[in-house]
Amino acid sequence: CSFCSIRAFYGSSERQRPIPEVIAEIERIESKAFMFVDDNIFVDAESAKALMRALIPLRIRWCCQVSIDIARDPELLDLMRRSGCMGALIGFESLEPANLTIAKKRWNIKWLSYEEAISRFRDAGVMLWGAFVHGWDEDGPDIFERTLDFAIEQKLALAGFNMLMPTPGTRMYD
Image (cartoon, rainbow, N blue to C red; front, top):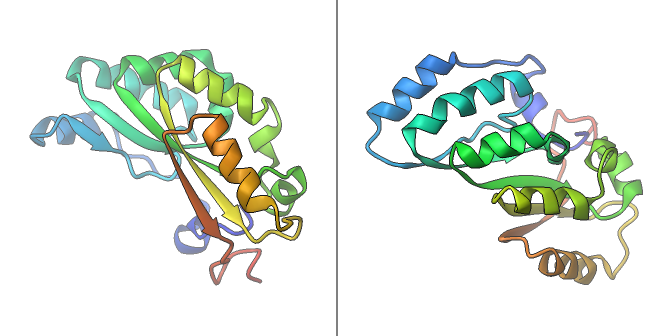
């Protein structure tokens, strides 16, 4: 994304821990509830599927952050459910396609509408936390109410409404 701090802080290389190491760490912890704080645990779908298959026998409950485009992969959604995923944070960012272009996040609506993607997560039993950003060039005065109405209509479990504040080092800030 043009405004996101992740690449500015960590660069563009992908890093993954070995799955057996992740499973061993989870087994050492005395909790049955986890939040994977990776910015997108599903950036490599095959690795994510392998992780979820390894999580199934642990019978844990977990949450994560994910890109909405995984809703087009029924196997991935099923593995999320079977491995104990209760919820996912999704960066919807904006309801306006023009703003998604500015954000370099058109993939949010490339394959599925927001409504269809949300429906697929819901059918898989995964609650959603929608993250929205206000302050884009194409936002009008009605954007706050429209976004709130959308979150309520779509029955998002949680919603976060943030102001656009590009981080130094991002494309948008530059």
